[in-house]
Length: 385
DNA sequence: AATGAGCGG
Image (cartoon, rainbow, N blue to C red; front, top):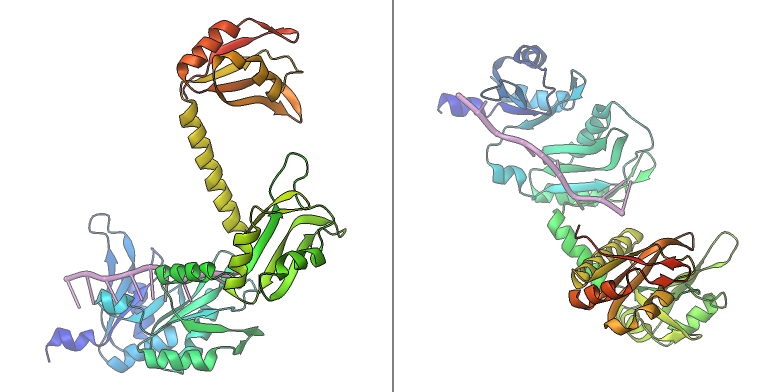
């Protein structure tokens, strides 16, 4: 066997190194398990700054194994090192075969020494077979409650999953499963969302009455939903005093029923109020969607009003949107009128959008300086931002 | 609830 090839077998990759760790320091540490042939910390060619990883080449394979078994996650200069067999083939390193995801780990204790948790995890799971790498994810606040253990082969990984799923670790019932890439996971969630069985229901906004009347309770909601299929549960959300928050949820036993309910009740009315019914979303998802819709609306409005928007200043306090609109009737279609308000009171200025710049200009020349209520109108073309 | 990142001479 070629010399280089021989030593490569006893070569360890050392990652997560503190920038100040030196070859000397590593040599002292790893020589404790057996003779070390060479050590190299990889550095930037120009600055010579540590790239945060190194190779430790042992003379004996058994010593490398021993280092891996006993020194993984040991802190050097306060930072836990991460030991792996040197593997130059990026495909083999990154490919997801044998990679296991673990969640619901205990994160109650703010454990600043992350090496302990990592060592425990590594020791626990190495009883199933050879591990390429493992890590419990953490941040400044401690464990994030999930981890990865990458086994050398899938059979071992599946056995570990089978044995460890539902196992108790520090009072936490673990979830263990095959690792899924972000892309796969997103696709899976998308799939699940399209097969929804939970629906959200509320009244579409009106000026005064925003939500359900107080007369819509669980029973009434059950009635509304009942003709679409078997209902597992309904719930009108209430505040701490038991008053309806004006929206609720229904859970069906099948996607078909939920879909039918959403399609058929949406835009129908209940006690004369128009309803919104759709797939129940998580709050963050709903908020993101609303935000995006609002942005789009704003942009559309901006495009439509380009060059045709007037600012009206010095407005009498008694003038609201409707009164302002009525004062500009003869200049063609007005697409939008808005009197700016603060706590329900006019701020004394507003804007009007016309269907064309010509109509806006005409309106301005004819209306500027006119008296409305008790004040002289001050009109200007809105500046392009 | 949560699905990573890392490889020289």
